[in-house]
Length: 258
Picture (cartoon, rainbow, N blue to C red):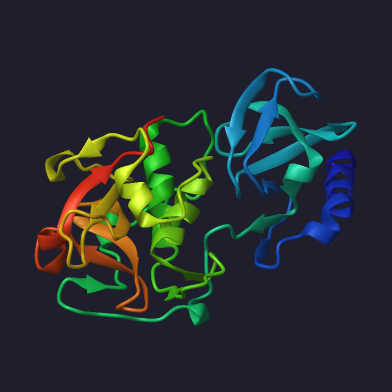
């Protein structure tokens, strides 16, 4: 017990100046603060897996710049760099309610259908594609209600493309900063409506030209998608199979296929 407490204190001292501003204090557990590798030994080399922000570990010991850790949800052991850990849980996606707004129209609102809510808040590369998609759902859903801003901070405010960028960037994807490139370029497959799956990027032509992508979002299942709308002024959930968006839908693109 004394050894574990010493390890936790060492991590805290190492990372004190880098502690996230938005965090929830926990005890006896440390968390990944960024996408990071867990290695078999206390050096860069063979990796056990990749973990994502918020992934929880217990500390078993230290070796140089590494901590010997055990995964809380999966039980595997390995070594991770100390600067990838913190004693507080980083709120990578969660936004305080005070930074959000409410919106409701016939086919769009800031209400997430209960059946589509994701509880997948931690992720490692040992998990499967289904868990990856659910984690992406969690990332997008956590931003519902955040305000639109032409020059966003990409934490509490977003524009249309930056929402998609932020949610997919945690997986290492470098998404283009303009919707036209996302919709028309790249090696990602083009999808018809019948092919849509959770996590697909949906593309629309909402302006006068009905063949050029000018709006995108993330499909979350059952005909719903999450997007940041400059008209609504926020991130919201809209229904794809009726009304305005059913008429302006062009196709989908699939980034998440690991």
